[in-house]
Image (cartoon, rainbow, N blue to C red):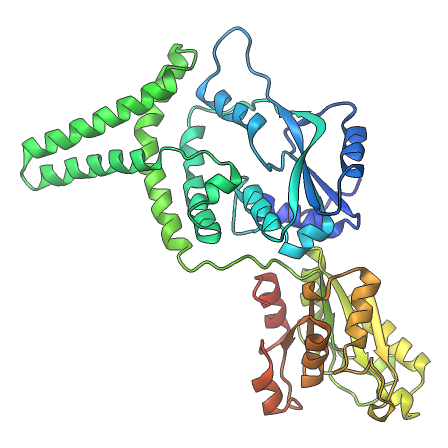
Length: 440
């Protein structure tokens, strides 16, 4: 068992780090509050073995134990809904390739809510399907305080994000309950109207608005109390929280509308970032064969470590025509690269072209050979690969291979190369920051 830590960021970020760190064809997600059946692993293997290639994921079956001696509380009923929910990560296995194709979980979902539905819709948008397996887990009802239903109203902002990303029919596609937002809006408007009318010196109209608020709140409270145990603790909790939920739900809905008004599709992190060596990771020394002359650019180690910490593989793609010209030897190139790894950390792949431009090879940048070879070695789709370099040849190699690119200009970068690059960053640190922000 290997434990990896994210240092925060929410469930989406944690799951992304987990699947990026793994190297298996299938990634199985289990929530930390579930109990798999004793034969779960065997049943998972059977579920996966039976799947055709067009199935990208399989969901386990969920049971939620409820008390046998009384009716369930509001919170218990909400948890019981997981037994019939679709595509929840309480127990869900995805092909790694499917996760990579869509960039994994959208980390703009900050809590364990809607991030799994969003992922499922994006995976199905690629033409893949999801299915249910025969394995089982038990999802106990976790103990909570009486205000939990108030806190979870923050998820209304996530519903706005879902609508922005997937359109008005997202609930139907995700098999998500409609909820009571229109009623919450009406109850909140009645309360606000009562306050405003009273302040305006219109007590009769204010009383009517207050009556509307009271009726709406009472209806909501009874809808939650009626199917429950109706004991003193539950009734007290329902009365208190039913008065608070409508305005808080409305507040979070409006907050989400503002926060996500310009949202774009989630791209996630690349599976592989390939770096040019001379001029990008290290200060350029022409035809360098001396490891002692290797000087990384400012922030290079920190930038690469940030990518590694997020589960992104890193590699080196370097033109070394000095070998073909007889100015340096292959062993010297290897020694310089070894020194670079000592200073900047290990690389998952190292690709070197020893040829001169006159050789007409298909590996020397801007030809795509090294980028394609790196992707093939690590089984990465070139569309999920990014090349960072300092000249147009780096951009050209990425484009020819079907990868993305970021140019980090140096004094040797020609103005036309900068103008033609689809993505520019002033420094290596800034380029990696763009990658980590999903804007690559």
